[in-house]
Image (spheres, rainbow, N blue to C red):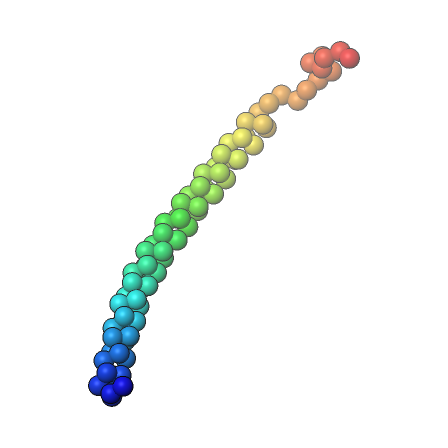
Length: 74
């Protein structure tokens, strides 16, 4: 095998590696943006859940205490 053939093969492999590297960079950028979007959505949902819990707690505090008259006979 001549030196020129080896150089051509190496050059071809380098080109393929560069293409693959660029593809992986694009994929990584897309995945990073998806992670960011999902993190924001999770934080929003956690905030909404906290607010809903606070409203439920406030409603529970407004309920009257059960008395003996309200209990059903056994």
